[in-house]
Image (cartoon, rainbow, N blue to C red; front, top):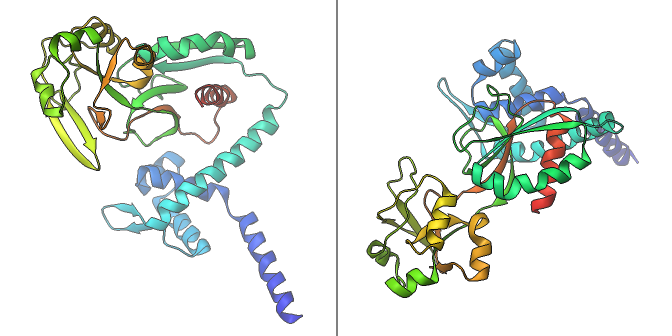
Length: 316
């Protein structure tokens, strides 16, 4: 009976600890994971850096593991810290969702939703959805900006960015919209006239339609069983829009490297032929995807959450 009572007392104690755990300290922990700098976080919150440090130390003491390795020059998350960050993100998101759903249950989003996306993806895949979304939320105005370059979401007052590639700025909240694959393809007419390359090295013998990528020197990557070949391609034509490269490929002007979301219908219809299906191909890295990005903030407006959920449901 004593053992049972002790177990019950311990269980109730753990429940009280979890209930009393300061949610703000969890948000502070996620900020440290993203920025790795106590001073900048303290300045943004209007507190002393020592307060940030004490809060993290208290959290580590509470859960019984070290979350960061600290030196005078850097803050590096431990393996346990990375795992805790991954798990706690879902918990905080669920908590915020529950609070916002309770607050917004009888409200319709209003105001203006500002979205930026690349011109090609936006015109092909986002614009056709706007009428349906607008019918669902008629009080919400939409401002869609087509921009292929970098946009500072906070400075430009953007609510959501739809971007392709690997993530570079971890200060934004990111949700994967779509995984992204690339194909090397050509038209049947081009292949009939110029032959079909049988190996990555033979790509050098063909006219490739070039897309400028900073620092990548028109290299195409071929990955097979974890081995990567990097082939420097060449061609007579350089185009700065992927939709233009697609049109030139269909016209038989050369080989191209384009994402699946852009050319999948043409591949399915046989208007383009995919080459090197035994390889994973890309021009930058193998971490690419299409992402929904929005500024990190403790309260995500209903209009942002609703548009995110709408897109995720459509593309799932």
